[in-house]
Length: 181
Image 1: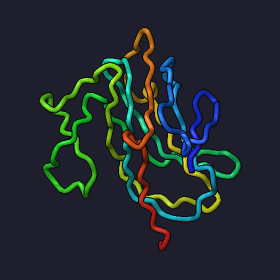
Image 2 (image 1 turned 90 degrees about the vertical axis):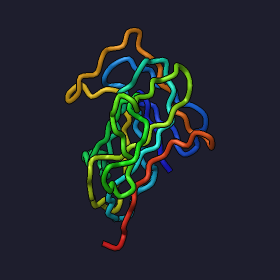
Image 3 (image 1 turned 180 degrees about the vertical axis):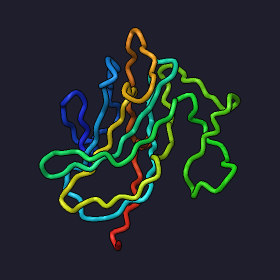
C-alpha cells in the first residue's frame, strides 16, 4: 500500500481511482508516494514506471525519484529517471536492454501531447541495485521540473497535470526485489 502526498496532504494511494490533479505552480510542485507499512530487507535491482497522465501543457518534463525513508523520516536518494513526454514512444533497442523500455528520441518518433487526452509514459531509472533496510519505507516522487539540474521552461499560465489511476489507466511502479541476498 502506498500513500500519496501532494502539497503536504496525505492520501491512501492504493485506494485512489480516477484522477489526482496536480497544479504545476512552481518547480517544487510534485507528488510523493510512500509505502504505508515498513519494508522487510531486500535488494532492488532496476525498476520500471508506467504513468498515465493528461495535461493541457504542450509538452511536459517528467522526473521520477526513488528514495528510502528511515524511521525518523530522513530520506536517502537512490535513483531517478526522466523523460520528456513528447519522447514517450517506445521503439526497438539496437542492443539488448534486458527488457527495459527504449526511446530513440528521433524526430520521427516524437509524439505531441493531445490536450486533455490521457497518455502513457513508460520508462526506467538510472541503473541501481540497493538494499532497503527492514523497517524503512519506499518513497516515489514524481515532479515536472528539476530546477537544480535541468532547464525546464516556465509555462504561463501554469498547466494542470492529472495523474490517472484506474483499471484502464494503471499507473504503477515495478521494483524487482530479491530477498535472498
